[in-house]
Picture 1 (tube, each protein chain N blue to C red):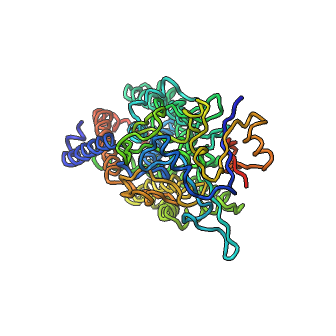
Picture 2 (cartoon, rainbow over the protein chains, first blue to last red):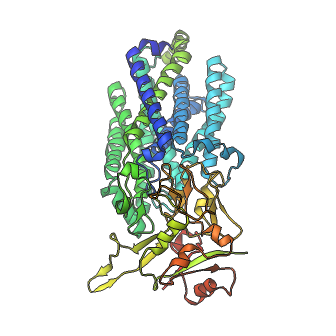
Picture 3 (cartoon, one colour):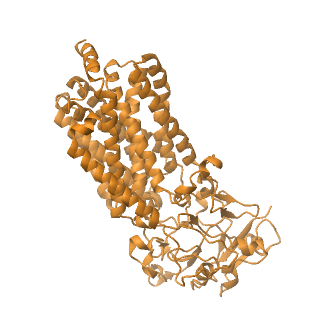
Length: 400
Length: 205
């Protein structure tokens, strides 16, 4: 709570955003999902984009923390606490976005009474629940200082963290109706972007906590995390390159269509910004050891990577919704005339489009603010209290 | 086994949209939703044409749920709200639908529509067949192959109302049925066969 009290203005602003978000969500519950920009053509929107994004942010943090423990990377063990806190907060946010996106929240218990084992969504719910439980155990054992228990939990945490993002990828990657989603490399792409966005967010959080004097990290550690980040960005770029080449090379009608929409269509700005500012630019910054010692440059690169991965979620999700597989006029009926302000013939569209409404954006901002508050509260509680102890502990390996 | 199906003659379809509207009436479909749409194939304007003058063609493609044997929507539904019944139809149990819209993303035919808001009807009253259940806000719906009619031995409303006699209804698993003969003799095809969904609805020219 210490962190919340010390930053009263920030806490106040975030609290207001949460209240506004809750208000907008209530409006959405009353009016239905018609309050959002989603429609029968583009049936998933900003909420599902954020869901994918936050599962990734979460998995990244836990993968760093647990590999540090499994592979005995002493240096990285120091950041395990903030990494796992970040990971816990992000997975809760991700879960929240799925619930917000449901049209019939009050029937959600049906998942428990009659789960369909062939649905990737069921498996995602199982894996995310396991993952959250593991995160909580991880935090608990770290707080108790039980290293043996931490090392056991981390052996479960790493595979589950990789799985959590793979299963999320399979929600999309197993649908052969969507040309842009249906690829075996989607799960590896998701894991790679989880690593780079999660690590980038961790670096931002560590720098922020260091500036506030909550948690001390050496510049050396930041630099070596930044080096790892550069590698992850390169792997991510490699996977995306593989996917683009495989889509483009045979020159099939569907493949060419997807690529033309991606490179010159409505989702093109997101695609190009991701490639240039989310992959190329940060990699060029972080690949030089001198830049990795500069915490401002590391923060800029990390910010760009987080933004880039968010844009990637956008182009990945929406490009496949644009042109229906069975093409012809008048096309699809929107179904959501409130958001579209369209009736009669105008409610049909040959090509599907989507733009989030103000309600959707405020709900998302509210959830983000809630996550920020939760992170501040948890770091205050779990790190702030034992700050002096960890600071002295850290001094030893730093000099070694 | 029974595999109820609709077989459509693209030669006989004149693009009048009667099937789409009779479906809307029969099934009490609210504003902004359709279970059955008549597309002008490959065109971005209704009643447009494909090709370059003077070599033009115009074909209509009525599209509703294809009642696939290997239904992508049924596979991804987390609660089993979408199911295949013993007559080969793909149906939805509205009480089980949580509105996740996974099925809408999985269906290659965009046959599914969602109740984004509290259903509104121009007449301010339910105009559909009394046997058809009224769907609440937040559930997915689609062509049921007129479940309530076909259960009682009647033909689907779109088949009854088609003025061009372009639509045929029957059991594909009965080799002597009209639809089985049409599929056999006219070399009828299914939409997007390459997706492997094995639709029951067939088209022939």
